[in-house]
Length: 306
Image (cartoon, rainbow, N blue to C red; front, side, top):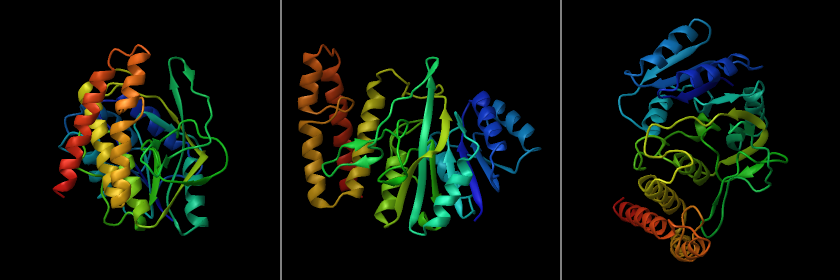
């Protein structure tokens, strides 16, 4: 089974350098490394010019902004049996590709494989642990925790964009959803894609040993890390809602929308969570609630027009 690695990148030459260096140390080398970049990103092209002499890199130009456009452009050039996707600010560990391939070889029902991303920030590595990873509850709560997962390999509902791979036959006819909002990261594009693969009947596997090191880098859009941005919050709520409306059957859609409006989460609050945040001194609780509901409302309108 041949393996392609797909990396979308934008204005992160030093991060991309680290990522390519990590890929050069894989115990199982990639057959092709597809790097998608903007034509105007000259610093990135300088990095690629150097690495093309050392590795089988296939550079792809994308003219439009946004991670979704970049990923879809890359998929058009990915002809291998397995397509492994990572971020430019990630550094896959040496056995990343060999462990991915092993899962696909052992079970023909496996459509996707992902693993833990060890997050490096603020001078430390996040080393907490969670057993529940990558699940979507029956009422609509999305649990990620991919960066904290421990235990054995198991089936999940969603994989994380920084560390996910797919069997090419499992994603035939699927592309990253270009209806998602956002000018850069377009949060939850991995949620949408994972659920589409699950909807086709394929298994998704999360294995903590399929590991990468993740160094969250600056984002060049409205979705800044660790900083509340109302536009980014509205976009995230829109994208999550659109993904779940596409995935759930009719009755569960209604349950999800009711839960999302009345309860929600601390990050995307409904009424009760907004009240709770307010009582705990959260100055932005009301603003967050409005932003989230605006995002969910726009997703419902878009869903009805499909």
